[in-house]
Amino acid sequence: MTEIPEMSSRGSHTPAGTLSDTAAWMASFRAQESARRDRRIDDPYAARFAKNLSGRFAHRGQLAADMVVQRTVVFDELILKTIAEHAIDCVINIAAGYDTRPYRLQLPERVVWFDTDLPDLTTRKKELLDDATPKCAVEFRNLDLREAGQLAAILEDANRRASRALVITEGLLLYLPEDSVRGLAETLGLHPNVSVWLTDLMSPAARFFMNRAAARHLDHIGEILRFAPRNGPAFFAPYGWTPESVHPAFRVMQRIDRNSNPMIGAVLGAAKLFAPASLDGTVLLRRL
Image (cartoon, rainbow, N blue to C red; front, side, top):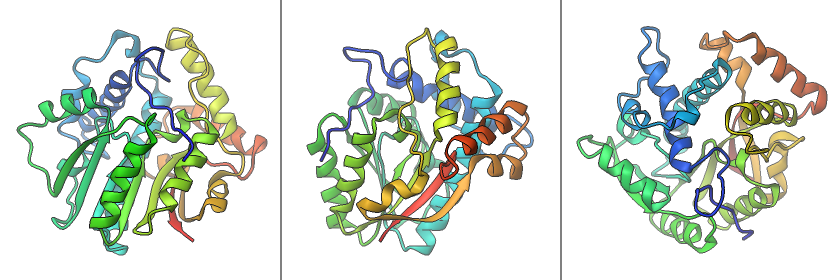
């Protein structure tokens, strides 16, 4: 497998500061949405993780908030739907950050949920969820994506124990170079019981605009977003994965009434001019 660089602060800047800050930033958007009367998600634990958010992430643009909320909504929906329709008994959340779905979604008890991330982040997460009761079995696994063998071991364990496993990479691929995404797709394909993969994608045009925004608000740390395939979900076909369903971000935002920033339409509309087959949104992939 091609090495997949992990996103920690050890030795260098991460795509957005430190990994824990990035995870807390995403949690802050979920907490903000959960506090609304017309909330589209209900994450009672998100505020715990957002409490100590670094000041450099204090900027909370409406575009970023809407994108995170729509992604959370569609991931929630597809996880529940996929578990039911594909008889999933194992979920592997790669680089889970401060995701709390095993605690807030009505998951079947039969499901084993692998929550994987760097040791420090995982330890902090377990501490903050100590009083919470998960809806299914949760196993926390340390995972450093620079070490290909660690991910392989987790996948082998899941393949051995599960009849059908769902892999989640939420908010991960966009930070990785193309070779690393290719390596991940190949590695997942080596495990027969890993049958469904849920991920989000970014278009080349949206990557351009988002990197410019990040440079303004995150200390000019450079181009933090990398993976934005011009051919969208078709990128994964050579590695044994085909789209089962595709969910463009702008359509989801319209459906849930979270498209208040006019810039969203302009950015995502421009994406189609540069790469008509690309996608800003979520795709559910299944094995060919």
